[in-house]
Length: 556
Image (cartoon, rainbow, N blue to C red):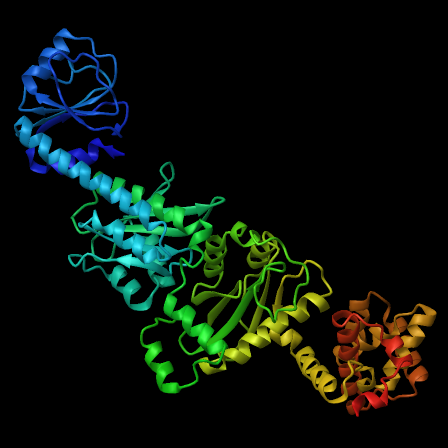
């Protein structure tokens, strides 16, 4: 669909004057028709060309029942704004009818071919292809596609544009927070809420228009057009709006799963995890081609969908949804939102799980995560996220990835709050040691019975609780976890401090152990975690295992 703004741009300096209807900018889907003196009925979807005197004659002698646009060859002084019928757009040009027809026919044909190329680009797996096709018809501009966190997904720059923001995106792969804030607070920044478009003047003096791409009223990406001309005209704005529609279709479609995934980065991650890439020289050469978002240290983040996995070794979730469940997940939207939460990151999809390498700014600080935003996003798609350990070596990725994925297993099984969807490796690292111990016991002794690793005092206390319906095991754990702070423990258990001290004395009496022994305290805490692992993760009864010891012959 082309508009009168496009027509006026294509005719450039050949326009003498114009009368544009006040009913809004008309658009056309039909062809070009040279006016026939005998034609009295015109159709709004077509564009008409004729001599100015013939147009004047038709307007004087014929009732024209529909709105339409007419391009005149020559001028006719008698055709003024007052005597041109309402709803009509009339453009007067210097060109003769035939050259005018040929010029418009050529430009409109090129425009329709551009739209067809955009349509075909939706079948591509690369958003970069769409960006390049978009820019082909906008030679006066640079096109940039950013995600919600201002990270570059694709771009196609005009050599005529020497813009600092475009250069920053090209060099770093994203627009920094400082640059975003500077742009948003410039005097030239304007948000047209009716059209949902943002206009501003860049630091280098170029006019820019930003088309937000939304999913459920949330911005998931931005389509940006930077004009090489002194000002951004309506022609370029309308082309940008058309291209943005195709970009939006691609980003929000299921076939665009990897819209923001650099193919080189995706291959790098899978090669590292599957240990196909171990040579340092090869790794360094491949890194030269990849603009990674982190500087020195990175965290691994894994997002998993419980009932969706193609990993044959994945035992996290037993239930599986139909095969078409993958297509029902808006991957692009989820990845865009994740990269808004983790703006300095690289993402890929591996065995139907989203893997992110997220920049860690300070070595000793725990990564700050907006848990409310992340939990809300995950809950909407029945997903879970694990925040893994960190490293500065990419060769450590296989270990970090497996640790993080195991954190998901353990977190879901051992969580106390059923609403919890985000798990940190450090909170479950002790259980990973227990998991490795369990694997060793299974391999060496051919049994999964780990109860004999627990301190006998804790087993006897657990048996007492089962029989008398008390909670001494929990009291002991909270007391030891709080480093024997009686006041804090009583507050967390919602009991009086004297009641809590009575329970501690009772525990020492029943077990015959002195909790002043630091080695004992460490052993009891570890034993408690082993009990949790057995009951919640392995889903076995500790006391049943105690009554049924493993057959010694099974280890022979």
